Image (cartoon, rainbow over all chains, first blue to last red; front, side, top):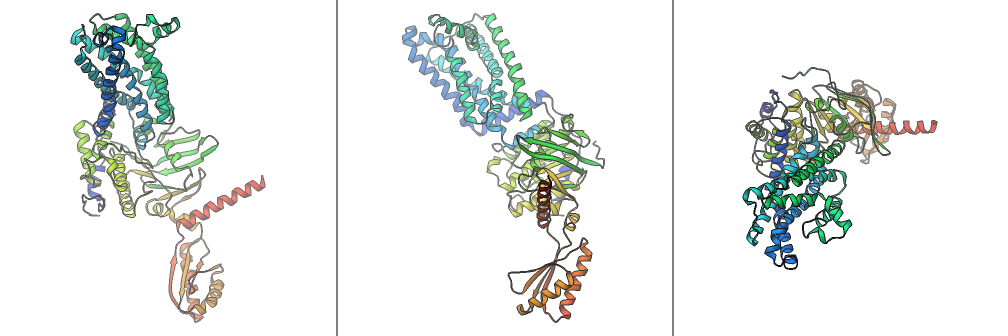
Length: 281
Length: 332
């Protein structure tokens, strides 16, 4: 067969020589390392953001709204003035917004998993969790963006962190690291539940109490004892305290350690459950 | 370099997969010789896709054994994965990404460095006539282009075994021909292809051997020729000049062929199924029957000799399977 390959889609005739040239069996490269495969899937997540930039709306508009809303709604009543309240609220609202955004991971996984492309990924000889890690790497970018947006809004509104650049950046790094670890719960639900809507529903059910029943908005001292007990064990409270301490320039190592341990446990437990579901899907 | 030893690419015995009450694959035995196109033919719901998914390590079998190039799919999934590649029934490419990005992504996942992955992607796009569409998102591709990209992605590393699950379902005739040409070239380069299809002519044109499956089991297996021969050697179709001579023609043909004659809706046409196993003997008997018509003074305007189509084979086989089952049930 000596047909010529034309460029237009319809009149294409497969040519034995050009096709044969790409089929010639060369040596196959060794399988990629776990890190390389994960980064490649991370690149895939970034490409998706590039092609559907609207999805960044969630990580920009939503945090701005949250910050403005709560600063002006509660500021006067709780701390005398919005600017005064903002010094207390900002680290917490940053944590809340970013942790809220983590639920999109589950939705995204749920949407994607039914598509044929997953069958292809699952037939590749690669480190299995890399597909999921890739998602979370893309999400870590989104978390960083959301945190940055809130920081900028906060600075504009009069937030003046004592911890300086280093304190604020460390706090954001801790928050993004925790959110990456925490998101494994969503990859699990994304694989477990049948529809996007049920993933959303479960996410809300988990995230609302977790973010509101915390020390984000008010001092837990004013709460009834049973609620104080919950707020005390809520990992979000610990994360908020750790972030506040870093931004204030007086790092609370105990709380930071608590957050890191909590994140590690989340990766081990929910990561294992996720991979179990992924392998059985 | 890789060994491409002749032998079996796929070997399954008693493979079972159940979904609740439904036994999607119910004791499947396959032996697929390496280096060929092997057709798995069956209607919707026969268990073709489920079988392919088990062989490609996507589903865990509930019973039986399956080996791909000697590697057990359950115990050595990575060894299997490194030698196979799958083009699923639904596009196994990412719709939101461009054709180029899809292939580079896959190249990287298969261990190519960035430059090599790009180079390979470009050459594949060219070989598949997609250079112009390289920078467009796949969701804007036509069905045929999408399918070509899908196959390009599957052969990125020149797999030893390629699963094509209903590769032409939903394609227009031209795109279908392109896929067929690609399959022939791929197989000529040493890749074994397992092709599932519900189109009989597709299996007939491409496959060296065919397994007909129904209700998760192989109900017949052989070369296309063998399968056709198993339902008789064909038929002879005759058109007369004069419709008045048809009853006479029917009588002569019945006497000669000892078979039921089918009178067509067209008043001058009739068709006779030629009994017997052997196609050559069938042709001889048909020519004797035609001679008998001529010597009886019946004027034949036109005649044709037809091999049984795989459609007939398939219907005959599934009918037979149905009858056998009924008999089993009655006996039980």
